Image (cartoon, rainbow, N blue to C red; front, side, top):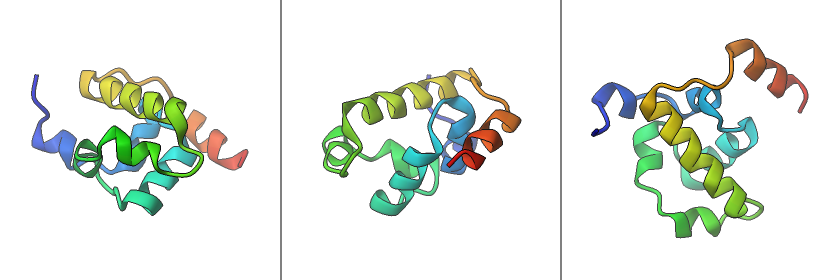
Length: 88
């Protein structure tokens, strides 16, 4: 099933609800200038792998979060995300 415009226009930070860590979200914004899901969809695995401290697990987390988001499978609540951010 293709991505909808609404999904593509979603801020990247909302992927935290679907399994993307705040740390990786910040790295994607800083190193790849990815602000929206549409930006992330065009980034190749090789580019992600070149980001310091990103690694294979980071790539896997991005792919899983995108899959969850596309399928509408939220894995965290807003409260859980806020709690994660407070912990550092």
